[in-house]
Image 1: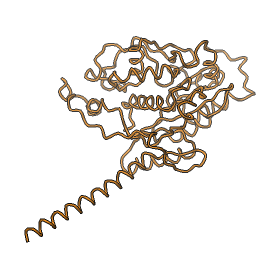
Image 2 (image 1 turned 180 degrees about the vertical axis):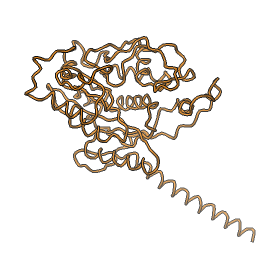
Image 3 (image 1 turned 60 degrees about the horizontal axis):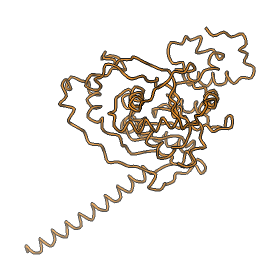
Image 4 (image 1 turned 90 degrees about the vertical axis):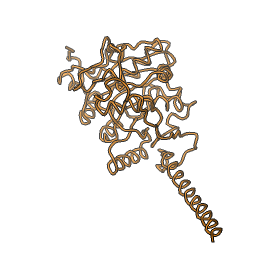
Length: 373
């Protein structure tokens, strides 16, 4: 009897192991399929790409060491979480488009790549941008292409529905990169680094980037003309320009959106940086920033972090008068003759973006009597 029980027990264990293996294989297969899903613009059908295109990472483990930092227990939960997971830089891709630039070698055909930070819920903004300044097109003999970089937000049903909307957008436009991390203000730096990793792999030979938010108005025609006017820089030299901010200090007032506690960043001053609402940079500089980022701990203010990476590389950002992000009056914001000559203006509602794009391209627009204050 004992021998039979042992034999049956062994059979049960073997059978159980087989069931676990089958379930695990199925789960891994489903997981793999979910993360390998991309879409092709030509067929509008979901296709499975080659494994070499995806980088799926195990869930990053919580680092408990920051809990020993003096004053840690008094920090807001969002900063405690930031410190617990500050080391996490690899997240599964939910939506990828490895051929967006035509492949690494063919990416040199892209003159200006528009890299637009957008949360999942901002469907209307993305739709307007696709029809206005972010429209993919040939201008002045060079190509402008578009990418939205996105995380995830919401829980359960809301998250699932938002992700489904993004999948539908991807089928139609093929312009979304999405990673499975929580979309938040304090994860914008992470979003930038994930994009730079993707760019190094899939689009290293493009020439220039616009990095900006989805609520700016960007005159991409002017950008192309400005970038084409640069002497001896086809994207292979340093360029990082926008609304320059110097001599800035971390904000220690807890009620500010930009509050950064000492436990997260102890320096008294930030290095020079450009406002993250919108700036231009060469791909050469973007790749240098990514290289520097590998040895610099993430901080929750993404534009400051870009400045930190530049400083470590011995490079400096510059100011461009065409980037107007702060302090503009409603009269200026609504004046197409003022906006027509600018590169980036912040901020616009979706309908305002659409209206202004039509106005500055109106052949009957007469700015001969307009004066800039």
